[in-house]
Amino acid sequence: MNRIVKRLLKYLKLEYICFWVVAILTFVLGQVGVIPNGIFAGEAAVQYEFYLNSTCIILVLVGVPLSLKLFNLNTNNGLRRMNKDEALGAYHLWSCIRLGILLVCAEMGIVCYFLLMNNTGLFCACIALIMALICAPSESKVCEYLETKEEERAESVN
Image 1 (tube, rainbow, N blue to C red):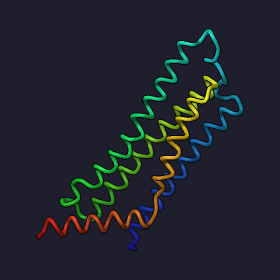
Image 2: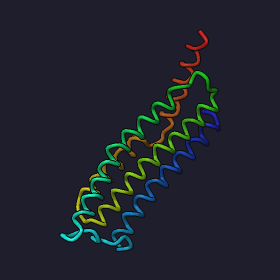
Image 3: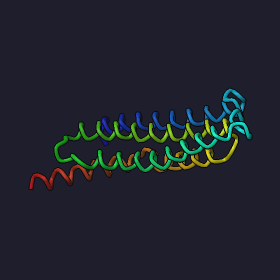
Image 4: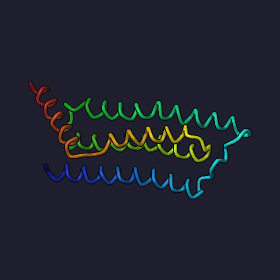
């Protein structure tokens, strides 16, 4: 494996660790009370609770599949016209976008959980975090991507 792929993996792993640090930090901030716990809980704030829960659910229902589909479409389509460096750049870009969308979903869920003190936000955050586990960077994924890129390029030449 050449040094460009190793450097890409280093960046991907660093970004992945940052994703988890931000999610855990947000949860800890909620636990210590920096995020006001239960500010929209109770009878007086039923309307806010409905809007926040609905927003959180819709964001996860749209964001999680969208992040995975966008990554798949943009890393597989157009491989024939890219060289190896461009393909690795596209892979890095769309990996960051995928993690960013999942982070927004997870953060919204965690914040909603602490603001409302009901489990809907926590369940939504867990869905986004579980999907992030599937998106963990690895050498085998990058190598498989490069092999697919080489096969696509060879087919376009023939």
